Length: 257
Image (cartoon, rainbow, N blue to C red; front, side):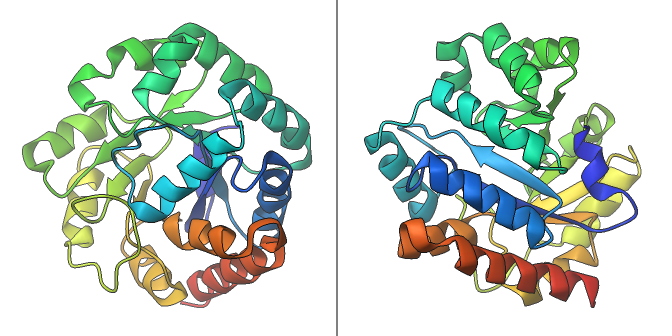
């Protein structure tokens, strides 16, 4: 399964979850309920002790998951169990240190074996991605590129080399919910379009069905993380129905736009 499958003839709804918050059994249930609610691709966050791109909501989830004893190997085992029950692509989102410490080739090879479709490493600059991207290509895993409002002249270079989809960061700073998104998403997408037909999904700051519907008019997909992680933080092991209601409301808003 390829990451691009999430975009087949539709605007993609991509969700994010921190694996192991509050525990891996609940993570498994949430993955299944998110697909049922209309999510087209899920980013699985592997917790890290210093998640530099994350705001307080996802940082908190990282701390809870690590405190509960979650490891990369336990996450791989969870994916092995749940992957056959899901029909949508899964990608890992984590940090270079996590992959380095596991061993780049071992991490990518195991990701491919358990059925992952892609990897996102937000702390790896485009210019330094080759040691990861080359191994990903070898094992058929998409190394997802990020474009930020500050990418400017580099947008065309990044776009030409992109695989799977392009993660367009809508706001400067860390992840988190924002009342409004002021970046000119349309202009960034237009520049990407001039260089590639790889889909563009917008994340960082989208937290309501209305924002999702609005941004999805300008891009090929939207990404929501902190709003979902916040629901899980509030309800813990009882969060499954609340996550379902939220993702369904987002998908409904996107479909009915």
